[in-house]
Every structure is written in C-alpha cells, then in structure tokens.
Amino acid sequence: MPLQDFLLPSENIKFQSKTLIRYADKKYKVVITDKRFILYAQRGLFLKSDDIVSERLDSLNGLEYSEKGLMFREANISIQGTTKMIIHGPISELKPLFHTMESITKSI
Image 1 (cartoon, rainbow, N blue to C red):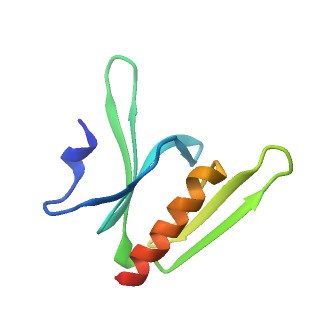
Image 2: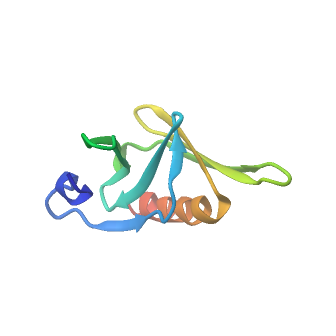
C-alpha cells in the first residue's frame, strides 16, 4: 500500500525525507504531517509488506539533535514521546528534519 493509504483524513504532509534514515537497524523514509511523525518502509521483494512507526506530535516531550564523526559525519535525533526513538542519518537530511519538527511542535 502506498503511504497515502495510512494518512488520516485531513492530515497534510509537512516534510518528507529524500533519503532513507536508520531507526532500530532498519531504513525508513521520514514523513512529518501536521499531526504525526511517521517512519515508513516497504519490505520484501516479491511479497511487499508495509513497515510503519508512528508517533503523535502532541505526545512528544523532548527533541534532541547531535552530530558525530570526523570524516564520515552523521547526525542523530532523539525523539521522546510515548517511547524514545533515536534516528540516524546524513546531516544534510536530519538538520532540516529537526528544524521542521521544532517549528511544528512549538505550534501545537
């Protein structure tokens, strides 16, 4: 199923990652809507299955950004909601994601 099938009625996409982000040793596409933070991936070559992790933006308690590495720099975002999620990826992808999440969660 495409991602559009998992969106709620009147839910609008605010940010969508261009590359894949790592979470729990799996790669996902990141989507931020006006209501939720969504990690989305399709798994399987022949029998496709959807893998979705979702967190409501109004349940987020904390948001942290960090960078590490000398030659191969990488960014981490720690998201504290009902569970703690730590996502990893390129700085060029995660820095705009972090700023978007900050602005959306401040307006909630």
